[in-house]
Each structure stands twice: as C-alpha cells, then as structure tokens.
Image (cartoon, rainbow, N blue to C red):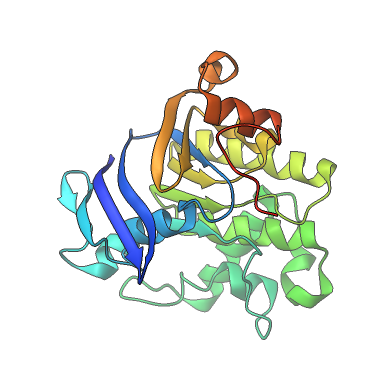
Amino acid sequence: MISIKDVHKSFTNNNVLQGVNMEIAKGESMVIIGGSGTGKSVLLKCILGLENPDSGKITLDGKETNKGDRDVFLARFGMLFQNAALFDSLSVWQNVAFRLMRGPNKISKNDARDIAIEKLRRVGLKPEVGEKFPAELSGGMQKRVGLARAIAAKPEIIFFDEPTTGLDPIMAGVINELIREIVVEMGATALTITHDMSSVRSIADKVTMLHDGQVQWSGKIHELENTGNPYLEQFINGHAVGPIEAVR
C-alpha cells in the first residue's frame, strides 16, 4: 500500500535519511524503531508530504504522494500525535470531531458530536468526558482522546507517533491494547514510530529498524529475537556496547 524507495532527506549538513527502502502492505501494522535522531519522524513527515524528500519516491497505492489533490490524499490518514496535541480551547468532543466539521465532507455539529461520543466510548471514556477540556484530563485520558480523534473519520491508514511516551507502564499497556484492537477492528494499515519495545511486541506485525538514516533490519515480529543483527540486538536489549554509539 505504501512504498518507499531510496528516499534521501538532508537539512543543511545533517543527512537524516540516506536511502530508505520500505514496503507496508494493506492492513499491516508496521512499527519503526530506532534511537532519537535516526530519522523516524522525518520519514513519517515525508510520507505525509509535510517534508519533501531530496530524492527517491514514496507512493500510496502506486501513486506518488506529493502529486494530486492534497485534501483527498490526507483524508485517507488518521494520526495520533506524540503528546496527544489536543486543542486547549476546545472541549474534548470538539477535539475528537474537529476533522468531521471541516472540509468538503463536513457534517452537522450534532452528528459530529454523536460520532465523537461514540469514539470516546470505544477508547473507554464516558460521554461526560466529552464536555471537559484537555487540561482537566490525565495524560492517559488525553492519549485516549487523541486516539479517538485519529479514528473518528474512519481512516484507511493510521500513524502513531510514540503512542506511549509519558505514560506509566500500566497505562502504556492499556493504550497498546487499544491500538491493536482498533487497527484490527477497522482493518486499517498502521505505521507506528517508537522506541518502546513493549509497544513493538504488542502492536507490530512487522518491524523495521532505522539507524544512521538507513534500514538496518526489517522483518516479521516473530523473527525479532533471533536475527543476529548487531544493531537490532543492541537496541532491543539496551546494551551500552555495540555498533550504536551512545551519546554522552
């Protein structure tokens, strides 16, 4: 469904992506792992067209992502941002319904609110939470609201940017389970970027590791523990010694 071929991206003298190749099949849950500054977020931005690659090609269903109608293209995506990224001045239900009430396919306020409440229920939040404001919610609840917003418009593809950052282990497990359930339930294609190995093991069908702007390993989740790849083994085991240099 998504094809990434020999993608390069630099910022002045910082070569962030250096020939990334990746394939994400329809209905697959792909998780990209790697340390900070390895190009995960930049790759996601290139797929969405928020950044243009210096070279290489990214296609969605065989069509280049930087060509054609941007609104039609972006309507296929949902996004859970790293820190939920909720609008402080809007109530919870308005945050969830934000996309539904805008654009060429916008729906009425009442219909949008009904859908928002339904999606809040799906992520385990009661209807009365919809009337609160983000500042009144815990971090875990904000993350659930962000997930409800990501799925409100029934996207074909959902991106998850560090979905468990800032959460305690129990709440992180709850969010991981919700993501997995919802992706399977919707039949969506999912792309997650994370360094949290509990998330990887919970939600991935396939894993790709980025380091130094290149794919160091890619394979099925069940292959993860016995790859013999020194980059991957150092990362998943948290070893200080190995080919990945620790920044001091």
